[in-house]
Image (cartoon, rainbow, N blue to C red; front, side):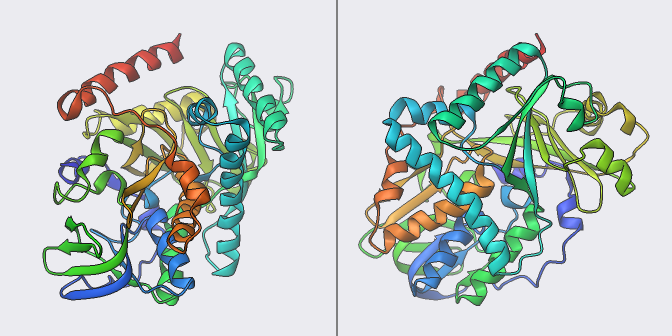
Length: 434
């Protein structure tokens, strides 16, 4: 089970250390009836609950741990347009140009929605604009430029090309050859944002019940969502638990397990720097990721730490010497930070699909699921919640666009899919090195 494996992930999170959580909500301990029961208090689940409550629906939100306990409270904090290059390729292959443009525009709307929510609900989450996608060598630079020109031409989305002669104006590192700057994307403190959304949902009337893991959903005209000590009868159910959905029972949504894969990702946080030193690293203070398949991603925090993400795990266990390995990756990028100590290190699982496109759909007419964000979920999860709320309210066009994305199961079934994926990742890691 993932929760047992989760204990192997590093649990010294800078995000948790830099927030003050509200008191834990009570667990479900009785029979409750509502219009909509949402399972999972991450971005997607909270967004769905918030949108539905503001439309006048009675909503119960069940969370197995605490709000933001999973990927929504542990991720890199990068709010990025699109689906990732692989996800966009899958969508363009399956959709007409007009449909692909509609899907892309929904992600642009997701960035606007994120900023609107920060302003509307006064969420103090250290939002900063700007995102840099950087390549480490000339061949990868040509591929990145081709992608950027495609996005600018086909989707009419503004990007700024950064050539080799300009790269030093953006980042104080000799590792990178060139890049692309996106002024519309940005970064934030992901747990502060998630907790702010949860507070807004509570204020809108959502009944949030934490420490309430779901072990079965009894399907039918009025689904019954059951925990060990209570149950919720509802008109509609929304499943937003991602890789944790089946942790407490195989009867929640067994048909979904083959299409997503839990992937462990890891981050470190340095000690704080002087502001001038931090600004010198990345003068625009944009979030950064490289274009490697097994990528590095990093950004500066509001208190002038470097938050650096790297490493991956496909079997749920923490790789050996992980902090040292990530620190070495960080020093490869910024040798001038060799003197900084590492004060925090943490990890968590993200949900990956085979084609890295999101997976939304229905298990039956009144049970919906939202997952498969594949590392690009900070902005898109907000739209996922909005789209499912639109659908429950009677307007399903935009949600149904995403349900038409075809997803293949990971090969090998439960027993062999992890080793198969690990072999694939070793192949891509070798390609990055060569």
